Image 1 (spheres, rainbow, N blue to C red):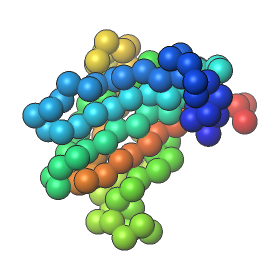
Image 2 (cartoon, rainbow, N blue to C red):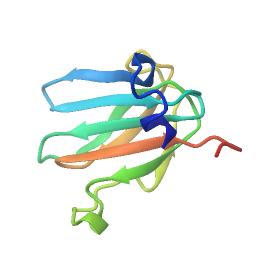
Image 3 (cartoon, rainbow, N blue to C red):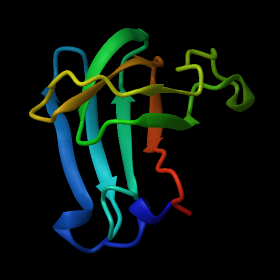
Image 4 (cartoon, one colour):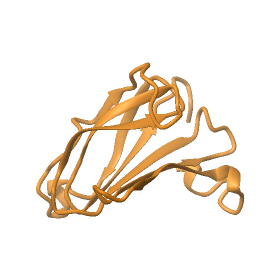
Length: 121
């Protein structure tokens, strides 16, 4: 994914979404490529053995966000808590961003979402 390497050595390639949720042991951040609107991924990490349902995370863009990686997928020996392939972002502000996603965060897991852009490679 271009978001994971194109501007790897610049602060413009990384942005915290939520680093303050110590009560639920969850962090989330964005990785961005040279064209953030086209090459952006959201990473959300749940460091507890408790799945989190309907966990709201702010994102900078609307559209469909595809679940690109779920460390709890059955294919990896996990319990299979997931997000049915992805979600359409809601026009509801969260974490200072104009859109949000309502996610299932698997226990002791990491999920990665990539915004799908029509015509982007």
